[in-house]
Length: 269
Image 1 (cartoon, rainbow, N blue to C red):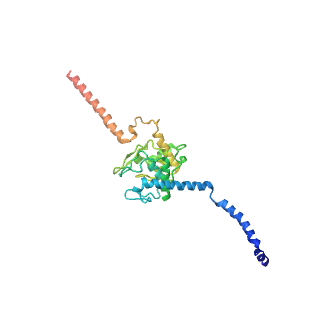
Image 2: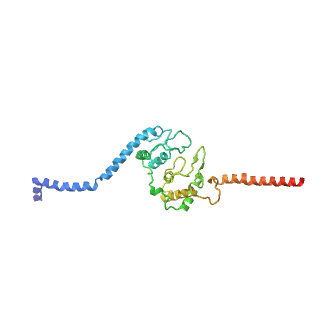
Image 3: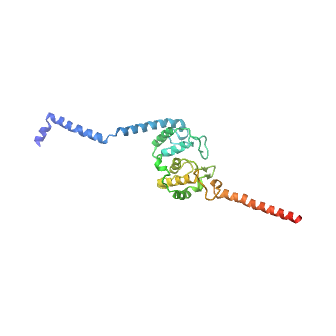
């Protein structure tokens, strides 16, 4: 023990320890330090958040508050996630033209790059659903029949059985889903915009959402032919019943009048 203590007091001992420690420190840094690619990703993300903050201040803060906390004119955006921003801004619903029971879809005023920046800033306010990838919302390989069952169970009571939309209470409505991009349909199910309930993956899995999108693409496609004949806009039994009463019953009444007139004329002659 004394021999070891004497060696440790030698002048070269500190140098030897330093030479041994330097390679170990370097190895640890190489192992655990972020790569240049990761640092670049973080820098790009930080830049996107700052750009999004500027866009938010100009176009959104007057209704949603300077920090996204919400005001009497707009709800809080903390925790809504990037997917909600991509849907609302991408479909032109936000920024809203005027307050009302429901914000309608309109022409989008932001580029996709600006939407991504706004989404990055809002996502930084609190965790929420991310923008889905193309693999998630692509209907390729989905089960159309299963999608039809899921849509009729969860969505048809508002959107009609083939997604033509319908009226709700107090001036609200379920919009038509004809021609809506698959990404926006997926985001709407994920985030539950306006009057719509949300369907997270715990309620409708990613595969379920793909199946529903595939069903809507099938029934609203350009080459779709209604198996029942004339679809009357696909609005369901009300217009079909109205058509039956007006044209069906009306035709029978007209035929009865014509027969009666012919009979009366024959008797006079």
